[in-house]
Image (cartoon, rainbow, N blue to C red):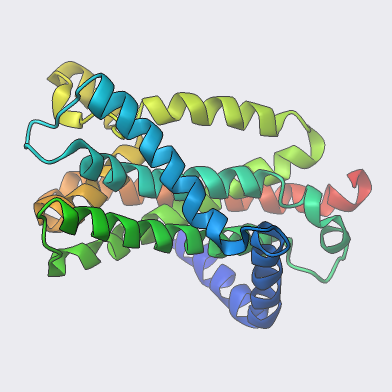
Length: 270
């Protein structure tokens, strides 16, 4: 735990020292994603809306899946899809973070460990837009926003730590093995279906749900649902919270160790 705290404080110090550079890189990343196309920032709304519509048509209209709590499928789905979308989008972008910023990665004085944070901050725009869409869908379905909705910020923190840890690993390995991106894409597709996004955790019998709960994203998704739909405070499930934070910190430390071991060889390979 001491090592994790030391790594965390060192990273925060680096982020603070490079805050202006991070801000500039984040703005540049946002412009690359949205500025210059005809739709611009509107694509950050159109893309998730299309995905939401497709899943709603297939699973709600087609398969007629209905959560046992009688909450409309579209609302339950959104609560799971929104944190997953942030995780998926950021991890895929961060896997290529070093490769796409070779001019920065080859500079000895530049702290390359902040590059994954840039993509994460840029992805928060889409995350915020989708949360607004969620609130609109909730109100349309007769579900009033409550103070508990703000609890998603609590779950966003371990999710951020988890994403950064994984991103350090994938971005560093991708410098040496360019197939890592394809492997991550395949794993994320599998990971999606092992996470209760289009299905609900209560649908699974106990032996299976126990193993599924070993997936940290299960607890993030359920946390978002508890925040927006059920009004369940996080401290009512201490075991799940300890496990979520434990996994996040573990991958943060592991990712930091892997990245620091490999970053000094980036210039030779790139």
